Amino acid sequence: MKQIVISSFVLCLAAASSVPAQSRPGAAECDSVLRAARVDSLPVTARAYLTRQDGELLPSRVRLLLTEAILSHFETPKPLQLQVFSAAPAQMRILRRETLGGDSLAIRAPVVYGWYAFPLRRDGAVGKVVPMTPSMVSGFDERVAAAIMAAVADTVLATVGRALDQDSLMLDLRITTESEDSRLRVPSATVFAAIFPRLRLVDAKTVGTLPLARYPRDELDDGRDGEALIRVVVDGSGAPVIPTVEVLHATSRAFGFEAAMTVARYHFAPAHIGACTVPQVMLLPFWFSLRP
Image: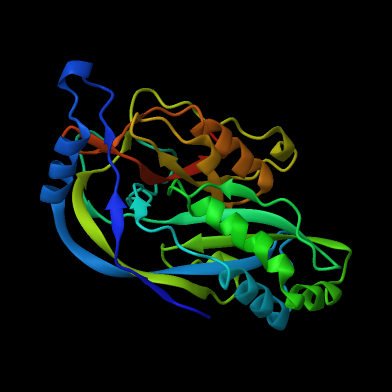
């Protein structure tokens, strides 16, 4: 497995949209603000996880061959344009989410995270690659899709296809610089290593009256308590980026769906460095109960 050390990257800031146009900082000013906010740096490793979409395990040999075939064709964009910052820890509550007053000044690093789905057929052909969660890194998703499609030319894919237990199999490929993901239950493969800067910023936060998640109709018969944890990127205007909404954990599919639909109606104050806003990942927990 090849490992690429990324030494060139660009941090992209979004100008604040909550101030009058004439007073918004320009790109040069935000670049200066960003440089001044840098605290230190840390080494990161981008890892790839290849899994079956139905939750069943791929044979380890098949997973390894297919992952190597894809990553051998992948070229990381240079410079790597980083703009999404890591999340604050999820604020767990016993009953429901609360809106906390004041700002949270924290040190965060950028993250790269993308989730891609594609079918692999028994003859080794690959169908359309769909970004389930876009990375928001310029050119990154296109490079991943191109690498998956280019792997079709490798004879190893025909061998892999014949080892499948069905004519067509939906696969998920996740590439992330975030911490190890224990949900996926498979070893990861290294995509690239890099040094990312850490900056001091004010975390994004929910604002206004938050809509309450509806207790799912499908769970009414059982009436059990439920929970869900949602991951979403909040952009520089404070809006949730809908394609990035992902259910990280849920007691059931119905609880996860209702939580995800509710997040789409949330309003946020975006993360910012001075007057310059930046997209940031948010982790939002939900609880469901029919009890008073």
